[in-house]
Amino acid sequence: MEEFLLSHGYQMGKTIGEGTYSKVKEAFSKKHQRKVAVKIIDKLGGPEEFIERFLPRELQIVKRLDHKNIIRVYEMLESTDGKIYLVMELAENGDVFDCVLQGGPLPESRARALFRQLVEAIRYCHSCGVAHRDLKCENALLQGLNLKLTDFGFAKLLPKNRKELSQTFCGSTAYAAPEVLQGVPHDSRKGDVWSMGVVLYVMLCANLPFDDTDIPKMLCHQQKGVSIPGHLGISEECQDLLKSLLEPDMILRPSIEEVSWHPWLASS
Image (cartoon, rainbow, N blue to C red; front, side, top):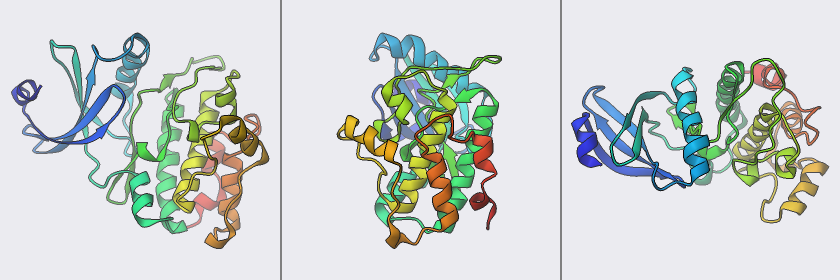
């Protein structure tokens, strides 16, 4: 592996992340003269569904996305031993989850600045016909003051002319919308909007809105709606946005376009 990457001009560094069938390492690119992140996917180590369904989809999707709030993929390499290497932009400042874990709830103005960028990224994805389906704080990376969305491992291309109804459960339970957990046919874009609500809640409260250790109980809590701790002093406008994102009825939940018009995001 090291030799293969070295022959392509990459000097490998430390491991910065690990997924189920992949790991992410830091590397120095001689060609770009900068540090990059290399996602290493082992085709031989993954289950059939992952290799035949999700992986080709991810590779197809990351090639077509180009947005300032989405981690850029510079190059894709494949070695003879069944490993795929995605060379990507490096986000030096970790992810939103670590940021909140270390520093506690974000001030509302900082949360708004980051969330606005997440809205832009998802609005772009949805306009390109892509649903992310695994939005969580760990996939919202930080590069200085900028948020960069990553990990399109569960992403899906939506059919052009007809409504997309998915029944696949993917992503993380704590961030999953009620309809996703229940396995009813749903619009994956509305699932993304719910997950964005969970991300915003975590940014502001440094806690998950729903406890995912007991799924039936969690579904009950989701139906009742989110409760926002009073002592944090979150503005009425922001609470209004949180409640609309975490709307249990997917038909009433706003689209990403509608989210982008919310007054809380417009205020400075």
